[in-house]
Amino acid sequence: MTAAVADAGATPAAHAAHAVRRPRRYGPGKVIKETLFYIAVIIVVLIALFPFYWILRTALESNSQVAAGVGGANGIIPSHLSGTAFKDVFTQQNFGTPLLNSIIVSLACTVVTVIVASMAGYALARLNIRGAGAILGFILLAGFFPVLAMIGPLFLLLRYLGALNNIYPLIIIYLVYTLPISTWLLKNFFEQIPTELEDAALTDGATRLQTLYKIIVPVAIPAVFTAAILSFILAWNDFAFAVSFLNTTNHFTAPLAITTFGQSGYQTFYNLIDAAVVIVSIPIALLVLFAQRRIVSGLTAGSFR
Amino acid sequence: MATEAKTVAGRPARAGRPVPVGHARETSDRRLGYMLVAPVLVLLLAITAYPLIYNIWNSFHFDNLSYGNLPHSWVGFKNFGNVFGSSLWRAALERTLIFTVVTIVFDVVVALALALMLHRKFRGRGFLRAAVLVPWAVPTVVSALLWKTMFDPRAGFVDYFLGAFNGSWGNISWLGASVWRSWIAIFVADSWKNVPFVAIILLAGLQVIPNDVYEAAKMDGASWWQAFRRITLPMLKPAISVALIFRTLQALLVFDVIYIMTGGGPGNSTETLSFLSYQTFIVNTDFGTGGAQSIMLVILALAVSAVYVRTFRTENT
Image 1 (tube, rainbow over the protein chains, first blue to last red):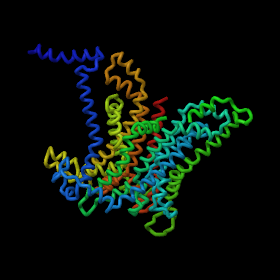
Image 2 (cartoon, rainbow over the protein chains, first blue to last red):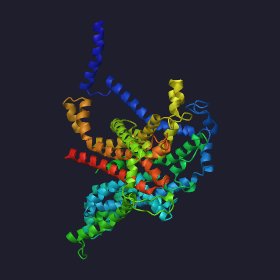
Image 3 (tube, rainbow over the protein chains, first blue to last red):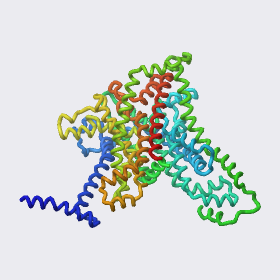
Image 4 (cartoon, rainbow over the protein chains, first blue to last red):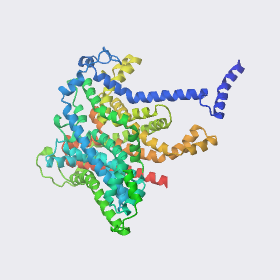
């Protein structure tokens, strides 16, 4: 009996020793490890994505189903799907206008960011200007500046200019989110482009601006695209400035508009809120799915030199 | 485009045209450089330095729109006195600091594990990376409202799930009822959104570590844990520092998730410094006190950055 136990105890150890000695792929220890790893992966994916399933499920409920609660007629998998919340968001809550506002502001901000940041990124990478280090430091610091410390003075400025409750100033203000990371990202990218091409063109009599447009810009398009994606996401996601400067619903951005949905007395209609949440998330989710690699490289390039 | 560049490179330099060389080229380059950098500097100074200076000015003046057109008189340090004397502000400072410490420790530890997972080669890695990135990429409004739904006693999954274990857990109100449960909900929503970001930064750090270091360690008979402690962690230090700076500042300035999930409640128990700043500026239109609060917020953010930059530097030299 004891011998059997000792034997049983010895076997896995022997297996383990085997696995170490022979680099085979499918030892029993390896299989267990792989299984555990995939279980962990599934758990992570569930944590990341299950809440999205839940809001989609809630968004597809009717008002009476929401009022009944999860413990009522509906379980995790709803028995009846209803598109009324998605319809109501547009017909009753007029969500189209804030969505359009958000699209205008985010796109305009992205365009400005890409132009301004690529100019600066090129200059900082190539034109050995004095104080480049200090300039880069300031740009980085600006990205860390407390947003909620800025709203007071900016509120007074916009009030003085008669530009409160107007989406267009946000195009400029959102640059504080987008310019620091984009400038750094593009500067890092320009630095990696070999200088030979440019030098040849320059000795050949091309001007700096000609080389910039003929040689650098075509090569830099992937990096510019990455900067554009990140900028769009960052501008699209703002809440703090919008909630501080906008006060009538037809001037709201989409994230701000959502926070006004679904409240009626003591009852919160989460189907309405979540329908809007789903709508706002879709463009971002698509961007991430199609440009995952770019976003990862962009984020990491932005954080490292 | 590339072919064009090649022909330019292949041709010998034209003789007839004066080409700026050496010093002349450098000065003309430099002038162009300043012109190209100017827009970024002007824009960022306008959005950050202008409010900062205006805040300093305001913090020494009385400036409150709700009092009509009272003169903006000089009040000295009175606004700062109001800030330090306010129990609301001191409580918010304490809360913000505790929230920051708890979240950054949790986020970095969890993100490290996640980064190791994202770094491993396996089928479906691209999908895992995309899945993990979605929570980071959606607006904070989305993550906050999503978790507000999840934690709702009627519409939410959390109570539905807990209720399956114990009937009395099926109807817990998280937000707006209990201070602790409100913080747990805020914490979950915040970390769910931000852990992926930290993980991506750490992933970049992992990708930089050369594989032969691990090979060498394996040859010497090092276990996985030894390799992790002696190789991965030390070589990951720069990435961890970067992640810490980003996350600490984000956590110190947390606003959106608080505003949306609890609105500072129950009572004032989840008000943070940024939330208070919003209240003072936009709700109370008190730009003097708000200015003083903002200066303190900026000093706090700068102090944290300075500490990190310093430890980061000394570790690397």
